[in-house]
Image 1 (cartoon, helix red, strand yellow):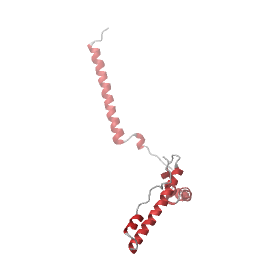
Image 2: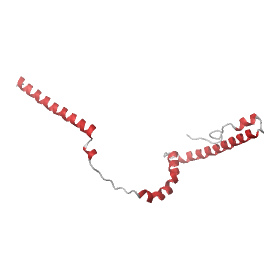
Image 3: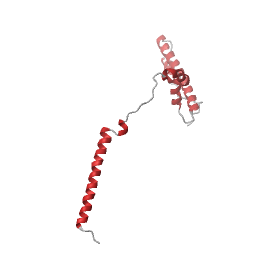
Image 4: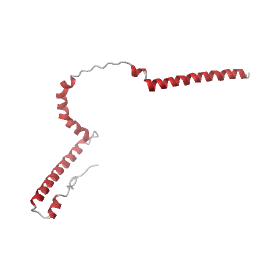
Length: 140
């Protein structure tokens, strides 16, 4: 049994019509989802909201995270990979060295105003302190 040209033409016409409706539906769905928004977007929702909950929980937040979240920011800055204590030690060393540097800078500015030391002594005091002391072993 060989397909006749009429049957082939009918099959082709049905395929074109089916494709046209698919194209038509595709254009409508693109327009609806991208321009108008999906049905989920337009559905009305209600959320229970209590505006006074922040006033009630302020003391709990401050106790846990500190005033203006300084404890929270420090914990985030130390990382979450199990090396928080090492980083805290490094920060303590860095803070001590920073304080020493500030004291040195204050001495330099005070000495420069008084003019009691030679220029070489001023340069020695103003040299930046190392980030880590030579005896401090950094772990990687």
